[in-house]
Image (cartoon, rainbow, N blue to C red; front, side, top):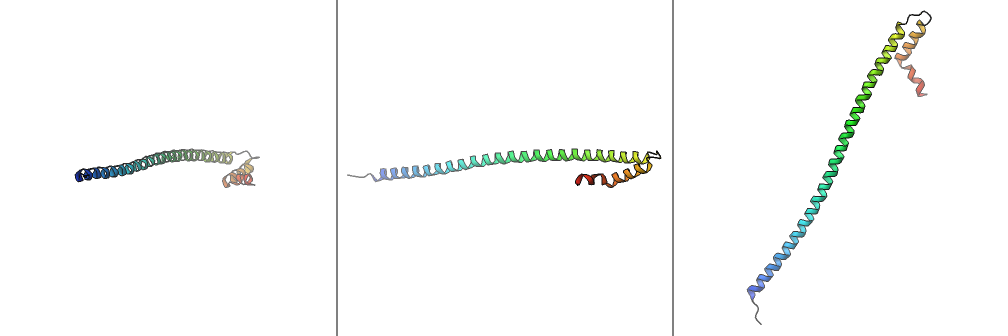
Length: 114
């Protein structure tokens, strides 16, 4: 029985190449899975970033509204204090001034904390 050395070398080279190709395909499959996992992770991070930006915008809007309301209430308080100081009925003058001083000092809020 004669072995064709060239044919055996060719079959061996083909088998080796097939084995290397299979190993490369497995490696590429692993890389593809890793890329898909990273894409999903990036998508989740993008959604979280967008949600955080929306929350930050909502918080900023809430803060602006609260600041506007505070400015309005301070203006109202100042108007009430001014009105109390200008009321000039003799029977109410002292009481109105005391009340205006009380409001300006913030004493009217101290009772709420108790």
